[in-house]
Amino acid sequence: MTEGMLDIGRAAFDFVDDIERLSDQRALVDRFGRELNGYGYHAWIIANLPNPGGRTDSLALLSGWPQGWTALYRRLKLIHNDPVVAHCLRSTAPFEWREAPCDPLVNPKAKDVMDRATDFRMREGFCVPVHTSDGYEAIVTMAGERVELPGQVRPALHLMALYAYGKAVDLCMPQRFPAVPGRLTKREREVLQWTAAGKTSWEISQILGVAESTIIAHIKAAAAKLNTPNRVATVVVALRRGEISL
Amino acid sequence: MIQVHIINNANRHLYERELDEHHQIRHRIYVEELQWRGLTPRADKREYDQFDMDETVYVLALEEGRVVGGLRLVPTTGPHLIADVFPHFASIQGVPRAPDIAEWTRLFVVPERREEHSGAKIRATVVASMLEYALQEGLSAISVLMNAFWLPKFQECGYRTRPLGLPDMHDGEWLIAVMIDVTPEALAGIRAARGLGQQSVLVHRDPYRPFIPGRRDVPAVA
Image 1 (tube, each protein chain N blue to C red):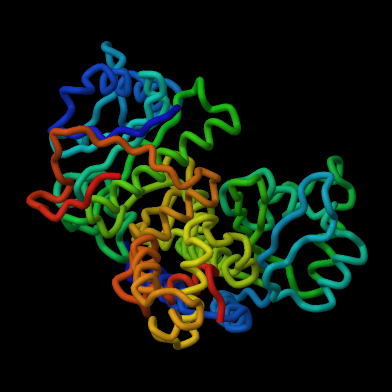
Image 2 (image 1 turned 180 degrees about the horizontal axis):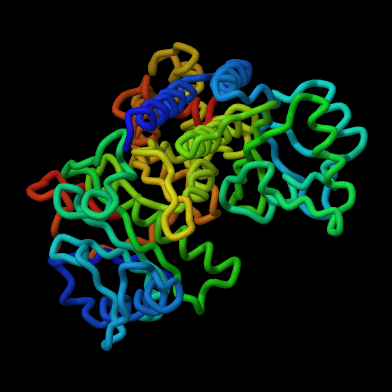
């Protein structure tokens, strides 16, 4: 492996490390946008795709598209004729836009979509298809005017796109993975909720009208279920899972 | 009813028939169906490679005595796929090697059971049982070389994964090596995302041998 390739790889790993810590969408938009700009891509989007015959609006998770393009794309329903989207639904491997078949005999309107994109300085692009287990298809794609894409950059973009997608889902669709049902009992959640509010076991026992030892037993039971070492950690994990809230 | 059995060199005498069936299934899948490069057809129609060792642990899903799915774990302190065959997939982070890190290979569901719903369910059951076993054995992580398109599916289950190197093309597929953190959240995540319920289907028959040699503080098996 050459030094240049290692540098590109390390930069991609730094990106993966960095975004794990991000807690809001804006920060991810900035970080991903900055990274892609470094490779010459000024525009990008992370979006779920409509199922065939399903709803027609694409479900953008995070968008770095030029605003005019988003508006035009929606208004003219370009998604139906977009050859990049069509290829994305059929491909598991990442590809460059120019690799997406754009045969006027198959779809005379496909070339028009690509031509309109160039009006927004989107001439060259790269696309990473995402296939989820429930048959949901998604896309991470990026575009620029004249993009040199040496062989070693593709794997780095591929990696960053997959992790950016995962993070985008985390930040944009947190309810997608609800708390595991039935994990904590109602009483355990109630006790943890009071613990999160700063109440001691004794105080909770007074509020709920039960023995303090019962409260301690509930907290212990919850800690065992969540595999946490102490009550602070138990509250943190319960919060993160949405079992309780602040 | 599917149960997922842990088979290692301490209890393998209880499973000779199932292990043999599993090697035949692997021949059908990896040699005949997928025609993996590096695997040559064998006269006895059983697939083995250099990572079927004394230390190897087989995680097999059994249904009415028949093998319907499975996978394989090996300690990363010894020979394993990423270290010995594909180290360039770990070129950025290096090959992880630790007693509490296992490498996962050869996930399969028998072709007869791959119809859409039950195939996915068997696969998820095997993977969830692997995570449950890894938790019981005190493992911290599992490394795996896999098709890159699995990564978003892992993220759906809420696994925390860390890449070991950049994706690369092998045999026409983009592969990537990652480490999956072994956590209660990962186990709860796959159970929730795949609708498996909270009930364990893991079976670990005596005589017991820990995955981490010399480990004593073995939690009670549920």
